[in-house]
Image 1 (cartoon, one colour):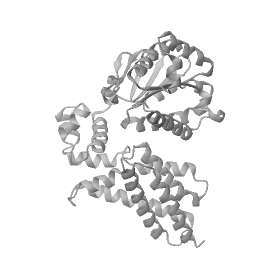
Image 2 (cartoon, rainbow, N blue to C red):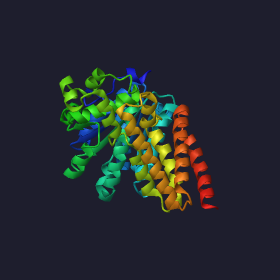
Image 3 (cartoon, rainbow, N blue to C red):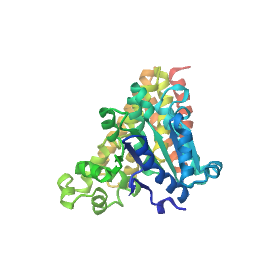
Length: 380
């Protein structure tokens, strides 16, 4: 069954977005909302992967039996998995956002490998109540999941018991999800209406330019996607070209920021930064479903050298080269500018081949080549 033909419902409303936070007034309310969503998924042929409190696992399974689900059969086929916190979020007793993102990615990929068109993954985050120091990492994880899911058929529902979490945590979590169910009431449309029109247009541009292309996306399509009036569009952007420039400058488009943060957080020594850069490129490509670099893609689309977006692309590519040159200098290269240019060439090739092959492997090959170039530059 094609996922695009399946209507996914939660709390009585069809879901538009794929990352949902469910804030319930107690466990009973959360369960009452989730059970129809789970049953619908199994009946429509989706896989259901549920992460629960270890103390509640058997009760959750029994409730599915009570709803008429042949639990033994769907578990045997792999269509239903019920795991606990210590088997997912808290492996080795602690929460690691990168490890958990890899776990999520593996579970969703696993579902496709088993032949299911989509996976409905539900995760209870109530373990974080006892680990408040982990909330910044939880928020970082949620942010990455929200971005990654936008191009996928899978649905991820994160549940929080309002009786257990404080107001600050609830407010932070609400701001990181595309959709919300609060006290059984869907909040998707309200959230969209509160978002400023300019941001909605940039969000629409991000989706359509990525999926359809800059040239093939018209103003009318952007207006419809953003749910704004034509006059609102032109009040913020005098022309489509102005929107293209703003999109290229938007933080959601600037992949280097995410990669640079990844390297800064994980490189224990300067010499480790360059290989880590290519590993981060592989992660970014995979998280974006191998859509590629919006700057290289836009440059290829816009043949007119006078188009205002080309100057933005040129500046951005120069910024990437400057960053790689900086990494080369910190690692001790005798000619960092030459090494930086070579690393950027490797980067462009890794991205292009990664997109063509829908694989992170070219970035891994580029990483190994970069190690060789670095060794030569250091004379070792």
